[in-house]
Length: 313
Ligand code: ADP
Ligand code: MG
Image (cartoon, rainbow, N blue to C red):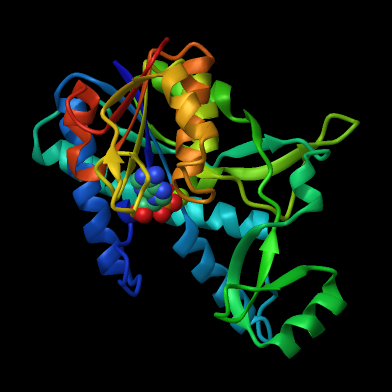
């Protein structure tokens, strides 16, 4: 099977960790152990991943260093984060294949752009908090100077919010498919991809926005004609009535059964919501199966015995 694996934040950093290089390397190595298990079982794996804490750190570094070196815009920071995370994955995948005596499947990490629609309503309503926390005064000053939108982030301080438009196409789709045909294990569209818009003259331009990595993962899965979209995170399954006494884990459902639950509002925006949306899109657009599962149970989820399985119908 060709499997698109979308990795959550826990694949690179555990909650509560500081984010130093050794922690991230260790987490990536554990994740790669799961990925290589799938390769060993005969599957072709395409990897995508989140970048929240990493791009957050880059934005803070840019901010604090801006008196000495110019700060970079968000699209460039996104590209940086793809490089730093992609590098850790490549190193780890290559070394693990070597240690396990598996031939072929060499990793290739691709800086990936994802097309968004400049008319997407998200651009009028920035919702995604990014970067450092400011005081109210500093945030308002900055907002007046730059035109950026800053909001009070749940009482934790003021934070910049940027639009989170819906991904349309993976700009590098042809390159990715060429790498897959040659047998590479591709890591692409990290952090949901670098959001770019297509201008009237056909040229591309990066924008100050972030794309949800699960929704972009679905576009990538469709672009490579994956048999399975696998979204790995830090809970074993999707639940209804999550975090209430009525909580119930979901095991195996059809597309239409899951659509009903989605309409009932069981899946929170910003966390489980986009995962379910991505999974439903994948199956609706002709994919065989999507699964949302725990990173620790990746191979079992692939084989259909763990996670929340969403099937045609
Ligand atoms: P990731 O980095 O993997 O994208 P998120 O934090 O965005 O992780 O999403 C996973 C989280 O979604 C879980 O840790 C869980 O707390 C939360 N969540 C919200 N609603 C649900 C639900 N209905 N069922 C399961 N988990 C849910
Ligand atoms: Mg998430």
